[in-house]
Length: 329
Image 1 (cartoon, helix red, strand yellow):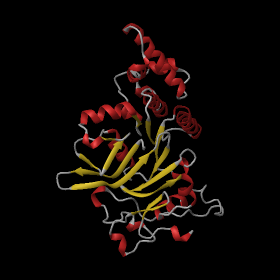
Image 2 (spheres, one colour; image 1 turned 135 degrees about the vertical axis):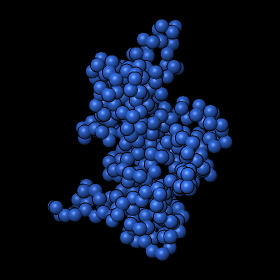
Image 3 (cartoon, one colour; image 1 turned 90 degrees about the vertical axis):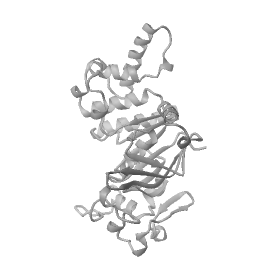
Image 4 (cartoon, helix red, strand yellow; image 1 turned 90 degrees about the horizontal axis):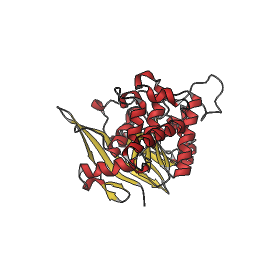
């Protein structure tokens, strides 16, 4: 049984003039203990999909799906309160902008202590306060903050963005979630610190069997840490498969373009050669193309692309394209 099973999820934004389909029939599934990458350019709808999973979208956004199951339970059949109770207990998310997610009026120590799961505490109420503080310090050590004394007394604005990101990761781990959604968890960090955080997430997956959805715009980066990868473009599903399948034999032109834009994936190129890139940029929500949204930028686009392609499954390697690259290998 899948831990998370989403089929044909759509997210609509209601504006004063019209309804905008920001995410268009995207499917995503995760097994227990799996590390899956969710990849695409900025504006692909990755963060929006993650926020729909944990239920933090405001009333302007309307979520529809053929299936939205968490551990076999159909979340769409539950009330918002019941859905929130289940997800808040089992799922945690590391947001992309930590400075805007932390409370500026409360110290880091107080926020971390509040995030500690009450099931970890025992004894009388005056003993629990000390236990919360000890648990908060252990969490800071776990994410690589050794000098906790200054950190727990500080307010978010007194810390660097990289430190705030580590605090956000510590708060997410405090819940001991079954699924951790990491939205660009190392965006504000240096390369050495990025490796440390990725190794921490990998150890949590291996030792705690924690499932991780790793969201990134960098396809090459996530290939080192994931089992499977799902690729999105402009709110549409593009391709999904094992990390090896996606990295060595991509079937979709967009996935191929992401790899071609990476220097390490093009080691045969001579020095100072230009990397291959797609023309144009990702469309804005107000001007989404009809059919396949990659069409205006795609080198393989034809007349059939004015209709959205169906998802084709090649023994677990899924692709949504009228003219896929499968026959070129």
